[in-house]
Image 1 (cartoon, rainbow, N blue to C red):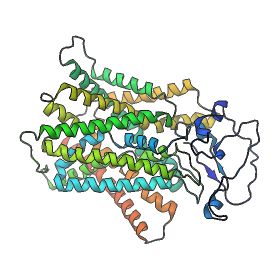
Image 2: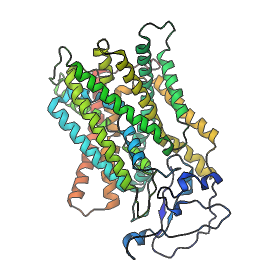
Image 3: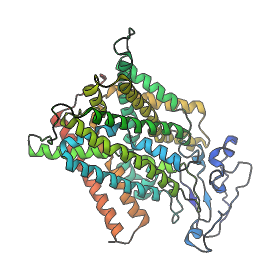
Image 4: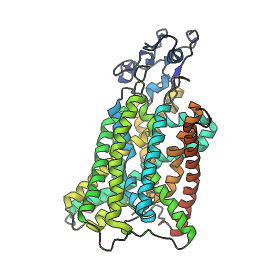
Length: 515
């Protein structure tokens, strides 16, 4: 993990006696170290042959203000200039919107109508609305916790904030596995979905007229993985802003296209809106909780918010929280425009007949594969593939950063390009191996949603309480304690419900046999 910026106190500042860490010549003039846009000169790494220069940022606040006293000196951790998340700090609100939308909406949204089959109309809409508001609030907390004028810290990674708040050992127990899954596990799921959609796209294009032998599903996984690995060679998070823009456009495109086509085609024959009821009371209760996990999994992406904000310059006059929150508001307005029509329109069109695996995408091909134009089906499949390739890049970036940090911290220099290419290829093809070995991973959405839920809905509340220290029993204090405890309790119940549902209904387990 990379370090954090340290800001000295208002005491007299003395020049450090330790020799400065040298940076490669290319870093001195890289975009991440320029003042455009709005990057303070204190963020520069001093060349090894020069004496470290200590300067005080320009201030516009009155003399002796708390911010002036807190921000006497700002230094950038030298390692950050060589790591993919923080290598470039010239991001802006538009980049933040691209990244947030690309990570905040995707294939997981297509299974939202499945939750409505258990909850029904009223509770389905209420649950989706409350989950959206809750996760938007905790997302706001993370944006505000990214940097602190009181402690002088800038937390560029979710795990850094957890470690600083809960302690390193406790943070590993609480957050390491969910964050690892939200990064690596999502990439595995994207390979599975991307490979299967590639096969669907091929079938639509050929239409049974191709004489060539089509690739097997494993070969489609390999083709998709190879394309993702090739695209992953872009060096840092800011460099994939264009990729995230394409991913955001395609996600919005196929979500809108699917629900519009489903609504236009009308309700399927024999549709029913009666909630599915289990055979026993226990089964019914656990089914309901499992659907909460499906809804919560649709709002993943919180583990990337601090990383996205880390790509922005920040100083007293232009704190990174302002453009970041602006980008988030743009992104989640579009997210709401996708998720709510998708869930409501999909359930209206298919009701209890919505397929559990694949959700709306599978329903489109199953129920309307013959009465919908091949162009629409092919375009939908292509948009899903492009979005999966784009999402792979942003979800893989924290893992790339973590792998490269080991070399950077040990060698005190940037990773060679060829070594970076090898590491990212190893990660990509490692995910491919897991996708082939465990192809049923995508069907565990409820269980995975329960495991990852604290990262989204609970931990930000506790971190806010620990860092901001609001006065006890004030409304904000009570709100965060209630949401934090409720999130942890809900996570435990969802995990238990997910396991019970898997045992009760079964999952088609097929190790090394993707279909």
